[in-house]
Length: 311
Length: 185
Image 1 (cartoon, rainbow over the protein chains, first blue to last red):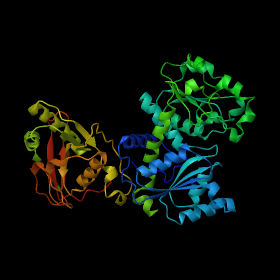
Image 2 (cartoon, rainbow over the protein chains, first blue to last red; image 1 turned 90 degrees about the vertical axis):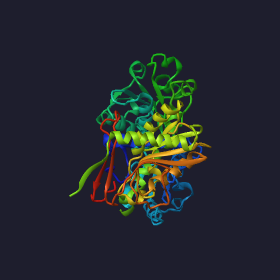
Image 3 (cartoon, rainbow over the protein chains, first blue to last red; image 1 turned 90 degrees about the horizontal axis):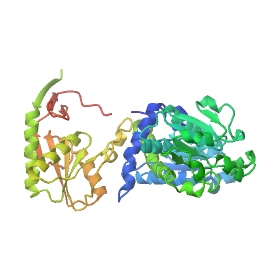
Image 4 (tube, chains in turn red, green; image 1 turned 135 degrees about the vertical axis):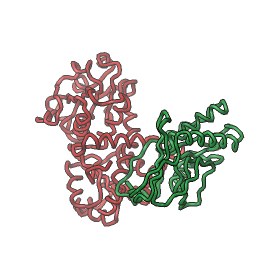
């Protein structure tokens, strides 16, 4: 199967079949991570530049490991040590990097739309590693992969995405992804953090978590993004935790096979109590593990082939 | 026009595999340290059948795994887009084992080169051997099979189709003569 897009900007642009194909491919790549020698020669001779304009541990490391396990040469670029601090514009930086002939750019940006803008500017294929409040497609895909691995299906599942919907790119990618694969998605959070019109993406909206708990198959607990000013939208983290956090006591009302997910980094005691974050229902570390497999599949699919080389 | 003719029927395939299984056991003096790895997707079915026959004749089972060698191919960047990768399922250690690679058709030898690299990444086997149902010639690498079901003279542009079904009744090997070279996907 050939993907219809040259760059991965968001899950909005992918069809259900394309998403399922990527998940299948990720399953094939996962096995490499358990080998004694965790490296295959697949992307030998390919250069990938990780262009991170915003701090990140998980995503950057995950992309770097994925690239290296496929034998690509991975170059990391972070904004704080770059010419951007000398006043170079974003587009000049991108054009200069492209002149060094990479085969793929992985872009993380603070502002929504940066990867889209760069993809029009450069001819190198590009993967969005999270942009502002827009999308974080690789996180969306690894969330889908993790749920599908645990539940053997996505069709018909009930997914609650809880918390800071307003600032969350993960929420948007998850809504597109889970809806396309047939799940029912409800976003839950304080009214101040639910952007108006979000239901146009095909999800339901709720303002109280507890009544939803008995029917949900998956609870996607989003991080409160204090760096994006989340703190202004609710009185305090203790109150947030009381209404929208998960404790062992609240979990008693949930399904016996509920999955607790979190894109990380967890604010312990706010979104999740430590007992829940480390408890038996939590698949947070599975998400991280699967992230490498999903990104290997994406690097493979977006990095190679004559089409990519000749364009 | 391309002519298609059957070169092996289900009985011939059954006998060939029976002989190959005996040869594998004979050459290795039993099944100690022996493991089979079928190359996806053509070698999958053949490896499973050989494992079953060997179990019947030796009374001991041999570990049987499957391997996808797409990630090791030397022509990845000559294709229009990336081919689909299938799962590698080798749930045993190959360290110090005698690995018998199994494929349906041996042609240029490029797949086997990729498979050998792939096996070596899983560990250091004591020996790697190769069993194929059909050897059709036209090698591009210095590779030969240890166990061959049928040597089949072909033209380079011919196609060899191996059709193996689960129940085995309609199994066949077909030679499609002078067809256009198979278009790479």
